[in-house]
Length: 347
Ligand code: SAH
Ligand code: SF4
Image (cartoon, rainbow, N blue to C red; front, side, top):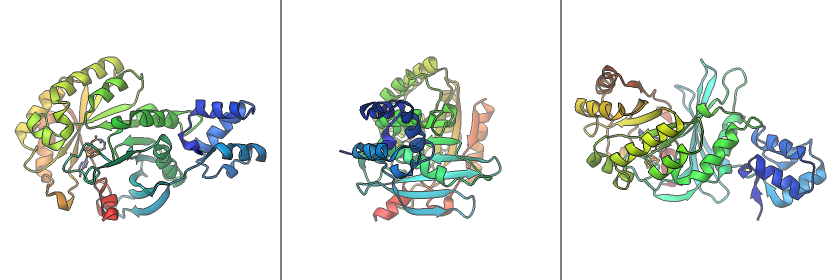
C-alpha cells in the first residue's frame, strides 16, 4: 500500500532512502520538501532526480486533504476550515492570525469525532469515528502555512484543541509534535505547542516521561466530581483525585507548569463558590487558569455566563493569587465552537 510521506519523520525518510539505495543526504531534501515547503506533489521536488521521484512514488505519496469549506471572520480574520481526507471523513481546523504581533496560532484536530462526549461540545456529539494519522495532523499546519501572508503573520504556535482527545491518539500526536518541531521542518518551538486533554491519566503519565517542553492544558470545567462527571464524562474513570495525582507526577517529572482550562457555563460551574474551590484546587500546582466563555451550540441548551459573572469569577481567582486569563473570543461569526462547522455539514 502506498504510504503518506507526511506520516514520515526524519528516521522514516532515511529508511526509505536507504531502501532505495540512494545517498543519505537525499532524505533531508525529501524531509524539507514534505515538512518545510509543504509540497503537495512528489513532482514538485525539482532537486531530486526524476528517477528517484518515480521510485519514491512507487512506495509513498503525499496525501493532501481537500479544503471543503473556508470561512473567514470579518471581525478578527480567524479562518475556519473543514477538511476532507481521502476516505471522505472530515475535521475542522482553525487559523488565528494576530497581525499586530505578526503571529499565528493553528488549532488542529486529532480525531474524527471524539469518544469522550462532553455534553456542551460539538466535536463529540456525533460520536467517535477514527484517529487521525500523523500526516493528517501535520497537513492542517501545512495548509495554514500555505496561507501565510508574508508581511502580516507567520505560523508560530500550534494548539491541539480541535476535534478529538489528543492523548487518546497518543503516538500520532507525539510524532506530529516532533515533526512540527524539527529544525529541518517548520521548526515550531516546543513551548509554542499546546496539548489539551480532558484528563486522560495514562496519557498524562506517559507524556511526563517524554522530556518535552510542550504546554499541557487540562480541561477542568469543575473541581467537584459530581459536576465534572457530567461535563467531562471521562471523569467517571479518572476522577479529580486521580487526575490531581497524575498532574503532580507530571509537574515533578517535566518541571513544566500546567494550564487549566475552565469553560464557564451559566448555572453549572460559574458561582463565586465554584471560583473559590477552583482556586484551592489549582493552588496545589504551579499552574495558570484560562477561562473560556462558553461558545453555545443551540441544540445543546447550555448558556454562556454573563460577562459580569465571567469577570467576577476571574477576579476571585486573581485575588487568591492564581494567574488567570479570559480567552479572547474569536470567530464567533463563523460557527465559533469547535465541531460546529462539521456538525452543520453532516446535517
Ligand atoms: N479534547 C481536548 C481538546 C479539544 S477541546 C480537551 O477536551 O481538552 C479544547 C477545549 O475547548 C476544551 O477545554 C473543551 O472543553 C473546550 N470546549 C469544547 N467545546 C466548547 C464550547 N462549545 N465552548 C467552550 N469551550 C469548549
Ligand atoms: Fe472531546 Fe474535548 Fe470535546 Fe470533550 S471537549 S468531547 S474531550 S473534544
